[in-house]
Length: 352
Image 1 (cartoon, one colour):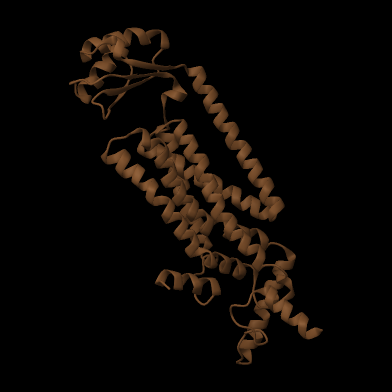
Image 2 (cartoon, rainbow, N blue to C red; image 1 turned 135 degrees about the horizontal axis):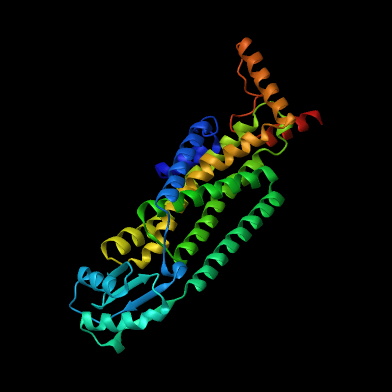
């Protein structure tokens, strides 16, 4: 077995572990700091919305000897708007001009043909009106809202409302950080970005549900034993799925990182940035939130219950009594890796 696999087995059995829940206020502080930074970036710089949302035109030219810098200059002069020019693998240029009125596009196309020394008929023009962009934005918000509602309903039914609330907060956390990074780096927000955002919500939810499922199983009949508090069971659930979450995230980040850093960076395929940045940041944020935010939030909500408070008091009292007698706090010969339901079942068997 590999070292990582051996570590995963030890984490799953509870032989080793890290106190994620006990240090949850540190993670809350880190998340609040990152979230505030993202919100400030949004407020100060805002999002660089693509022409799909603002309206404008995209001109694709055949092969030309004109440089990108020169093409940018002539495009802005011809249109009166800022232009983004990218060189294509064919040697042609992709000229994106946001805010350009569709009525003015024909004149701009003619001027570009003259300045770039290419045939006007060979320039392909894709025009997007601002009203169409508004429809895209509204549909994106509607889709996001429906997704959030369905997630909350499903988790409330499959688990409980506290887990649904914690998962929703974690999803909002992931969205805010991802959108904030977009504002900081100035990448364009396009329909590809929206697709990426919706995709990372699914990944984030997957990791969270895996931990929640372990927590649900581990906390079954928890009040029938005096060995573990709810927070300790939650911490064991996180540790038990930790290596799995890391492996899943790393495997997903590798191809996305290739798209972002190699495809979008070195090869200059700027359109890949639309979806790859949102996926890369969102996957990392989703893995973080499922471990450090979602489950600790469930603990904070759950341990407000009278039954959980009483259980914690009984567990601590038993440990204090055992320590005063110089005895081990281990419960009636059970192993340290036994779950509450194993302890409860063993007791029930002896009573019979």
